[in-house]
Image (cartoon, rainbow, N blue to C red; front, side, top):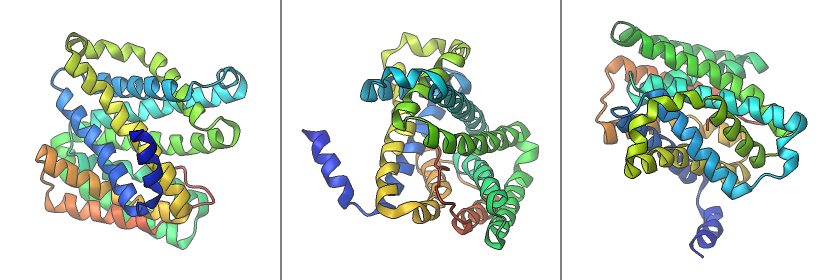
Length: 289
Protein backbone atom coordinates (compact mmCIF):
# COMPACT_ATOMS: atom_id res chain seq x y z
CA UNK A 1 0.00 0.00 0.00
CA UNK A 2 2.78 2.44 0.99
CA UNK A 3 4.76 1.70 -2.20
CA UNK A 4 1.68 2.33 -4.34
CA UNK A 5 1.11 5.71 -2.65
CA UNK A 6 4.74 6.74 -3.22
CA UNK A 7 4.58 5.61 -6.86
CA UNK A 8 1.42 7.66 -7.44
CA UNK A 9 2.80 10.79 -5.80
CA UNK A 10 6.26 10.80 -7.42
CA UNK A 11 5.04 12.23 -10.77
CA UNK A 12 3.74 15.34 -8.95
CA UNK A 13 7.16 16.15 -7.46
CA UNK A 14 9.20 18.73 -9.50
CA UNK A 15 12.08 17.10 -11.48
CA UNK A 16 14.87 19.12 -9.76
CA UNK A 17 13.61 17.97 -6.35
CA UNK A 18 13.55 14.33 -7.48
CA UNK A 19 17.03 14.68 -8.94
CA UNK A 20 18.42 16.19 -5.74
CA UNK A 21 16.78 13.35 -3.76
CA UNK A 22 18.43 10.90 -6.17
CA UNK A 23 21.81 12.55 -5.63
CA UNK A 24 21.36 12.61 -1.85
CA UNK A 25 20.50 8.90 -1.86
CA UNK A 26 23.47 8.09 -4.11
CA UNK A 27 26.04 9.97 -2.05
CA UNK A 28 24.49 9.09 1.31
CA UNK A 29 25.22 5.52 0.24
CA UNK A 30 28.78 6.59 -0.56
CA UNK A 31 29.09 8.23 2.87
CA UNK A 32 27.94 4.99 4.54
CA UNK A 33 30.50 3.16 2.40
CA UNK A 34 33.26 5.45 3.74
CA UNK A 35 32.18 4.48 7.25
CA UNK A 36 32.60 0.79 6.36
CA UNK A 37 36.19 1.26 5.14
CA UNK A 38 37.42 0.72 8.71
CA UNK A 39 36.15 -2.90 8.67
CA UNK A 40 36.34 -3.76 4.95
CA UNK A 41 38.47 -2.73 2.00
CA UNK A 42 37.05 -0.05 -0.34
CA UNK A 43 36.99 -2.62 -3.17
CA UNK A 44 35.19 -5.06 -0.87
CA UNK A 45 32.54 -2.46 0.00
CA UNK A 46 32.10 -1.74 -3.73
CA UNK A 47 31.49 -5.47 -4.24
CA UNK A 48 28.88 -5.42 -1.47
CA UNK A 49 27.20 -2.51 -3.26
CA UNK A 50 27.09 -4.59 -6.44
CA UNK A 51 25.74 -7.59 -4.51
CA UNK A 52 23.04 -5.52 -2.82
CA UNK A 53 21.91 -3.98 -6.09
CA UNK A 54 21.86 -7.39 -7.81
CA UNK A 55 19.82 -9.06 -5.05
CA UNK A 56 17.21 -6.27 -4.94
CA UNK A 57 16.93 -5.91 -8.72
CA UNK A 58 16.69 -9.67 -9.32
CA UNK A 59 13.99 -10.00 -6.66
CA UNK A 60 12.12 -7.03 -8.11
CA UNK A 61 12.38 -7.79 -11.82
CA UNK A 62 12.84 -11.58 -11.98
CA UNK A 63 14.36 -11.39 -15.50
CA UNK A 64 12.97 -13.94 -17.98
CA UNK A 65 15.12 -16.71 -19.45
CA UNK A 66 15.68 -14.65 -22.62
CA UNK A 67 17.58 -12.06 -20.57
CA UNK A 68 20.18 -14.69 -19.68
CA UNK A 69 21.03 -15.80 -23.21
CA UNK A 70 22.45 -14.49 -26.47
CA UNK A 71 23.54 -10.97 -27.33
CA UNK A 72 21.38 -9.35 -24.65
CA UNK A 73 23.18 -11.36 -21.95
CA UNK A 74 26.64 -10.54 -23.34
CA UNK A 75 25.83 -6.84 -23.46
CA UNK A 76 24.32 -6.83 -19.98
CA UNK A 77 27.28 -8.79 -18.60
CA UNK A 78 29.85 -6.43 -20.11
CA UNK A 79 27.86 -3.46 -18.88
CA UNK A 80 27.64 -4.91 -15.37
CA UNK A 81 31.37 -5.67 -15.19
CA UNK A 82 32.35 -2.17 -16.35
CA UNK A 83 29.86 -0.57 -13.95
CA UNK A 84 31.10 -2.67 -11.03
CA UNK A 85 34.69 -1.80 -11.95
CA UNK A 86 33.76 1.88 -12.03
CA UNK A 87 32.32 1.58 -8.52
CA UNK A 88 35.47 -0.16 -7.26
CA UNK A 89 37.68 2.62 -8.61
CA UNK A 90 35.35 5.28 -7.22
CA UNK A 91 35.33 3.74 -3.75
CA UNK A 92 39.12 3.48 -3.78
CA UNK A 93 39.13 7.19 -4.67
CA UNK A 94 36.77 8.31 -1.88
CA UNK A 95 38.87 6.32 0.59
CA UNK A 96 41.64 8.83 -0.18
CA UNK A 97 39.85 12.01 -1.33
CA UNK A 98 36.89 14.10 -0.10
CA UNK A 99 33.63 12.87 -1.64
CA UNK A 100 32.90 16.07 -3.58
CA UNK A 101 36.45 16.19 -4.96
CA UNK A 102 36.31 12.59 -6.20
CA UNK A 103 32.91 13.13 -7.86
CA UNK A 104 34.15 16.28 -9.61
CA UNK A 105 37.17 14.40 -10.99
CA UNK A 106 34.97 11.49 -12.07
CA UNK A 107 32.79 13.80 -14.16
CA UNK A 108 35.67 14.23 -16.61
CA UNK A 109 34.55 10.93 -18.19
CA UNK A 110 31.05 11.84 -19.43
CA UNK A 111 32.09 15.35 -20.47
CA UNK A 112 34.93 13.99 -22.62
CA UNK A 113 32.50 11.55 -24.26
CA UNK A 114 30.04 14.40 -24.94
CA UNK A 115 32.77 16.65 -26.36
CA UNK A 116 34.25 14.05 -28.68
CA UNK A 117 30.80 12.80 -29.66
CA UNK A 118 29.54 16.12 -31.01
CA UNK A 119 32.55 18.47 -31.22
CA UNK A 120 30.38 21.59 -31.02
CA UNK A 121 31.91 24.78 -29.66
CA UNK A 122 29.69 24.42 -26.64
CA UNK A 123 31.05 20.97 -25.83
CA UNK A 124 34.65 22.03 -26.44
CA UNK A 125 34.16 24.90 -23.98
CA UNK A 126 32.55 22.47 -21.52
CA UNK A 127 35.57 20.18 -21.87
CA UNK A 128 37.96 23.08 -21.25
CA UNK A 129 36.05 24.08 -18.12
CA UNK A 130 36.10 20.53 -16.78
CA UNK A 131 39.78 20.16 -17.64
CA UNK A 132 40.55 23.39 -15.79
CA UNK A 133 38.54 22.16 -12.81
CA UNK A 134 40.36 18.82 -12.79
CA UNK A 135 43.74 20.60 -12.93
CA UNK A 136 42.73 22.91 -10.06
CA UNK A 137 41.65 19.96 -7.93
CA UNK A 138 44.57 17.71 -8.86
CA UNK A 139 47.10 20.48 -8.22
CA UNK A 140 46.33 20.45 -4.50
CA UNK A 141 45.91 16.68 -4.30
CA UNK A 142 48.89 15.25 -6.19
CA UNK A 143 51.27 15.58 -3.24
CA UNK A 144 48.83 14.41 -0.60
CA UNK A 145 47.01 11.69 -2.51
CA UNK A 146 48.29 10.99 -6.01
CA UNK A 147 46.77 7.50 -5.82
CA UNK A 148 43.37 8.97 -4.98
CA UNK A 149 43.52 11.23 -8.04
CA UNK A 150 44.52 8.29 -10.25
CA UNK A 151 41.66 6.16 -8.92
CA UNK A 152 39.18 9.01 -9.53
CA UNK A 153 40.43 9.51 -13.09
CA UNK A 154 40.27 5.73 -13.59
CA UNK A 155 36.64 5.88 -12.47
CA UNK A 156 36.11 8.69 -15.00
CA UNK A 157 37.49 6.48 -17.78
CA UNK A 158 35.25 3.61 -16.62
CA UNK A 159 32.28 6.00 -16.60
CA UNK A 160 33.02 6.80 -20.25
CA UNK A 161 32.94 3.04 -20.98
CA UNK A 162 29.71 2.77 -18.99
CA UNK A 163 28.09 5.42 -21.22
CA UNK A 164 29.17 3.75 -24.46
CA UNK A 165 28.03 0.31 -23.30
CA UNK A 166 24.87 1.76 -21.77
CA UNK A 167 23.72 2.99 -25.17
CA UNK A 168 24.18 -0.49 -26.64
CA UNK A 169 22.32 -2.12 -23.75
CA UNK A 170 19.48 0.36 -24.20
CA UNK A 171 19.21 -0.52 -27.90
CA UNK A 172 19.83 -4.27 -27.83
CA UNK A 173 19.15 -5.19 -24.21
CA UNK A 174 16.19 -5.69 -21.90
CA UNK A 175 16.03 -2.44 -19.93
CA UNK A 176 15.94 -2.85 -16.16
CA UNK A 177 16.00 -6.63 -16.59
CA UNK A 178 19.35 -6.21 -18.33
CA UNK A 179 20.52 -4.04 -15.44
CA UNK A 180 19.62 -6.79 -12.97
CA UNK A 181 21.45 -9.40 -15.06
CA UNK A 182 24.45 -7.11 -15.46
CA UNK A 183 24.84 -6.56 -11.72
CA UNK A 184 24.50 -10.29 -11.13
CA UNK A 185 27.32 -10.96 -13.63
CA UNK A 186 29.45 -8.17 -12.16
CA UNK A 187 28.96 -9.61 -8.66
CA UNK A 188 30.11 -13.06 -9.78
CA UNK A 189 33.08 -11.85 -11.85
CA UNK A 190 34.36 -9.58 -9.07
CA UNK A 191 33.61 -12.11 -6.30
CA UNK A 192 37.34 -12.39 -5.33
CA UNK A 193 36.91 -8.88 -3.88
CA UNK A 194 34.63 -10.45 -1.27
CA UNK A 195 37.83 -11.49 0.51
CA UNK A 196 38.08 -7.87 1.64
CA UNK A 197 34.70 -8.01 3.41
CA UNK A 198 35.49 -10.63 6.06
CA UNK A 199 34.51 -8.63 9.16
CA UNK A 200 31.19 -7.58 7.65
CA UNK A 201 29.83 -11.15 7.54
CA UNK A 202 30.21 -11.52 11.30
CA UNK A 203 27.87 -8.61 12.02
CA UNK A 204 24.25 -8.50 10.78
CA UNK A 205 24.30 -4.71 11.22
CA UNK A 206 27.40 -4.24 9.06
CA UNK A 207 26.07 -6.66 6.44
CA UNK A 208 22.78 -4.75 6.32
CA UNK A 209 24.68 -1.49 5.88
CA UNK A 210 26.76 -3.02 3.08
CA UNK A 211 23.67 -4.23 1.23
CA UNK A 212 21.98 -0.90 1.97
CA UNK A 213 24.79 0.89 0.13
CA UNK A 214 23.69 -0.93 -3.03
CA UNK A 215 20.06 0.11 -2.51
CA UNK A 216 20.86 3.75 -1.70
CA UNK A 217 23.57 4.25 -4.32
CA UNK A 218 22.06 2.22 -7.18
CA UNK A 219 18.44 1.06 -6.92
CA UNK A 220 16.84 4.23 -5.50
CA UNK A 221 18.73 6.71 -7.75
CA UNK A 222 18.04 4.62 -10.85
CA UNK A 223 14.32 4.47 -10.11
CA UNK A 224 14.11 8.21 -9.42
CA UNK A 225 16.16 9.02 -12.54
CA UNK A 226 13.63 7.16 -14.67
CA UNK A 227 10.86 9.38 -13.31
CA UNK A 228 12.94 12.51 -13.94
CA UNK A 229 13.71 11.40 -17.51
CA UNK A 230 10.01 10.93 -18.25
CA UNK A 231 9.09 14.31 -16.73
CA UNK A 232 12.02 16.51 -17.76
CA UNK A 233 13.33 14.91 -20.95
CA UNK A 234 16.92 14.24 -21.98
CA UNK A 235 18.08 17.85 -22.37
CA UNK A 236 16.99 19.02 -18.93
CA UNK A 237 18.20 15.77 -17.35
CA UNK A 238 21.69 16.44 -18.73
CA UNK A 239 21.59 19.93 -17.22
CA UNK A 240 20.46 18.55 -13.86
CA UNK A 241 23.55 16.30 -13.79
CA UNK A 242 25.47 19.44 -12.82
CA UNK A 243 23.78 19.23 -9.41
CA UNK A 244 25.56 15.97 -8.57
CA UNK A 245 29.06 17.31 -7.72
CA UNK A 246 27.43 19.99 -5.55
CA UNK A 247 25.23 17.40 -3.83
CA UNK A 248 28.26 15.18 -3.22
CA UNK A 249 30.16 18.10 -1.73
CA UNK A 250 27.27 18.95 0.60
CA UNK A 251 26.89 15.32 1.73
CA UNK A 252 30.64 15.12 2.32
CA UNK A 253 30.55 18.34 4.35
CA UNK A 254 27.45 17.58 6.43
CA UNK A 255 27.95 13.82 6.93
CA UNK A 256 31.71 13.32 6.80
CA UNK A 257 32.84 16.81 7.88
CA UNK A 258 34.95 17.16 4.74
CA UNK A 259 35.75 20.82 4.06
CA UNK A 260 37.11 21.56 0.57
CA UNK A 261 40.05 23.89 0.09
CA UNK A 262 39.59 27.04 -2.01
CA UNK A 263 41.23 25.51 -5.15
CA UNK A 264 39.06 22.38 -4.74
CA UNK A 265 35.92 24.51 -4.43
CA UNK A 266 36.86 26.56 -7.50
CA UNK A 267 37.71 23.39 -9.43
CA UNK A 268 34.41 21.77 -8.48
CA UNK A 269 32.48 24.85 -9.62
CA UNK A 270 34.35 24.75 -12.94
CA UNK A 271 33.34 21.10 -13.35
CA UNK A 272 29.72 21.96 -12.49
CA UNK A 273 29.76 24.72 -15.13
CA UNK A 274 31.21 22.33 -17.70
CA UNK A 275 28.61 19.64 -16.96
CA UNK A 276 25.79 22.20 -17.19
CA UNK A 277 27.16 23.59 -20.45
CA UNK A 278 27.70 20.33 -22.33
CA UNK A 279 25.23 19.50 -25.07
CA UNK A 280 22.95 16.50 -24.47
CA UNK A 281 22.82 13.96 -27.26
CA UNK A 282 19.68 12.35 -28.61
CA UNK A 283 19.77 10.14 -25.56
CA UNK A 284 21.56 10.80 -22.27
CA UNK A 285 22.94 7.64 -20.72
CA UNK A 286 25.51 9.30 -18.52
CA UNK A 287 23.80 9.06 -15.15
CA UNK A 288 25.98 6.98 -12.89
CA UNK A 289 24.68 3.90 -11.16
